[in-house]
Image (tube, rainbow, N blue to C red; front, side, top):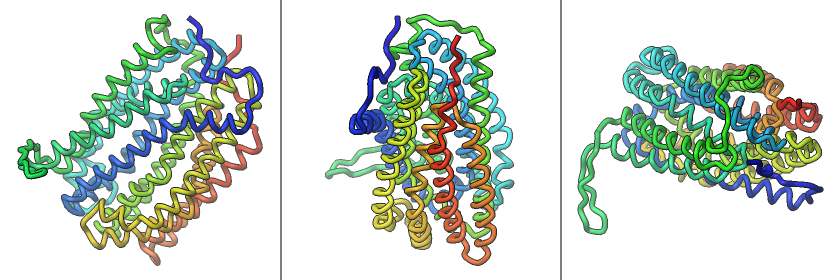
Amino acid sequence: MKEKSTLNINGQLSLKNMIALVIRLSIPAIMAEVSSIIMQYIDAGMVGSLGENATASIGLVSTTTWLIGGLCISAATGFSVQVAQLIGAERDEEARNVFRQGLIVALIFGAILSVTAISISKSLPVWLGGNSDIHKEASRYFFIYACALPATQLRQLCGSMLQCSGDMKTPSILNILLCVLDVIFNFIFIFPTRTVTIFGISIHIYGGNLGVAGAALGTAAAEVCVAVLMLLAACVRSKKLSFKYGGRWKIQGRCMKTAAKIAVPTAFEHMIMCGAQIVSTRIVAPLGTAAVAANSLAVTAESFCYMPGYGIGSAATTLVGQSIGMGRKDLARRFARASVILGMVIMSFGAVIMFFVAPLMFSILTPSPEVRRLGTEILRIEVFAEPLYAASIVCSGALRGAGDTLVPSILNFISMWGIRITMALVLVPYMGLHGVWIAMCVELCIRGIMFLVRLVREKWLKNRVVVID
């Protein structure tokens, strides 16, 4: 059974139609990201109500969870980019073969990540330099997170496969469901059993009273539920990837080699990015619990602005990947540029809103006056970087669709370690947490410029990870 690719283009597209297509594919992903942010606010608010130590416990290990999550995304990307280009070339059976091999790798890699993370869970808070009074809760949170990593890896793989096959709607809906379930489970596990009065009606609600550990357990339970649904969507319901259309489970050297060529630089990129963020956390930790909490909540609040960029970047990966698979470099070029412009416009608008509503955001996220004040001040520093941050996010998504992952990883290494960390170390003794965020703002602007130069020079158009026999 052969179906046409998502693009289904035989001639030229006008700029208006091209932007419309980018928006059509971006909206489901953007909505999923925005809903994720809303749920993160609620999530952070739930934990924040427990006090500064609870927020700091999660904030201390959050950069490490981002690192591991990035490795899961990298493993998925190595296979999903191949699927995008194969579908663009109308080689659907080969795409299904790649999907099956990706499932095998995902199960093995997810298990390895889980065992490794569990083994370091007790020592991690100490390594990160957190205060001794938050070590226990931070360790318990990370341990529970680690146990759910196989489900996280499967969710990431199946979601990226569906997106690269052109189905942006299904993974977006399921990721929204992930956020909703996370909040519901957290509401149950974090707080004690209590009676809530709504419109004069008393409702008895069961609670696990697990505190910070309850937040981790709620997230883990949501991950497992959605991973199962995402797996069913890809393996049973997908018009491109479903097992009912046939395929082979045999591991192929060419597929593994191509996956490694894409995934290893992407993993290196996530490692250097999150490694730098872990070092940043290590720099912030001695500034006190209030600084750690404000830093963590400011990152959550900022995501309101940058997550739409990741939604557009996901659409750019699909559109550029399928265009390259079709042999239409002209389309790949135009889709990449249109996506970047759209991302910069949307994130600039979001930055303006974020500047004015920053105090309201922190009033929702924490009851601590000191954390509110500090968080508002550092968040307002960051808004000036958002337009160029958008450029780096969407450019990265477009370049990934072409299989260009090595050079972007090098650019990120230079930017994060050569600029952000160096500046932060210089500024923190004089400016405290503000120095860390000034360094971040400057680095994001420079990173955006470097990615724009990479995109405009167009060396990435020579890439095509799919081999034509």
